[in-house]
Length: 367
Ligand code: SF4
Image 1 (cartoon, rainbow, N blue to C red):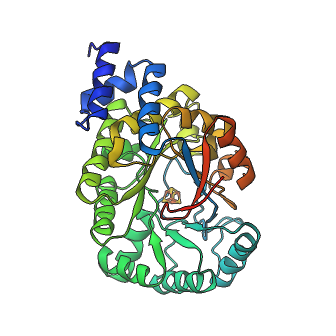
Image 2 (image 1 turned 90 degrees about the vertical axis):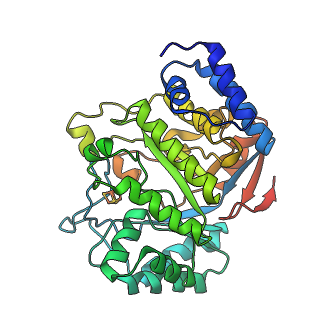
């Protein structure tokens, strides 16, 4: 594909005028486009959408179990149930863990997800969610990956729609984008994801959106995928977004290889470069444009300075304070507990305005 910087101007123009960015355009942006020019286009689109405001949420992650029968090759978190450090929390344990952060930090969002644990049934989830809703009324429950949703519905022999309806009645507010990775099956085979699970992710999200349940979208890059796989991924999300507008945000995650089978088997030798992280942010911003207004940084794996650069390259949401996260530490990476003040300072340092939001992206405070 022979394209030039002029083509990138044309792609930028297409984005600004709301015309669709095609598969070839996306592959070009991944493989050839100048990163600085990409950043300029993406940054200007982000400023048109949200001005100088950068949102964040005070939140925590509750990984209620690490036992999982899916066993993805990119995951360092799961246990089979036989190891000493396998765990499943009781509802009382979950509640007392949340209380530590709810009272101390005024968290607004609870991201709750864990492994696909065959010993847990529908009752556990309904009781868990209703208890959290009753004990912590100011908390938006952002819960369960599509893998968990699929398994729970099959085990309970009810449709995904009926399951989501029950979960919503018991407190579920939104669904995170986990489980998306890269949709194409040839990539998912190496990730050890079941065949068709990419389409299943899209189907579950479509069901949720058609019921008025808002969700997030993600993409995991920096493993065995090619640019065309990322193009398919972004365009599939865009297509669904045009139908219901149900995605609240999109986060491109770079794969953390530490302690994973993909690393041990030699598929991935090192993590994505900073340039690659910024390229993915910028391309997402250009492709989704105003259809999906919020692009979130993945500071959790990349640190504060990369979070700041991601904002300059087109992101407009910092993500969360993320107290209590356990999945990334399983890769051997210490992410610490980034507190609200640090996020506010980091956003201000690059001349932007920090805005605290809730789980549904309503503004809570402007700093
Ligand atoms: S990514 Fe999720 S579904 Fe896959 S092995 Fe880890 S916990 Fe299980």
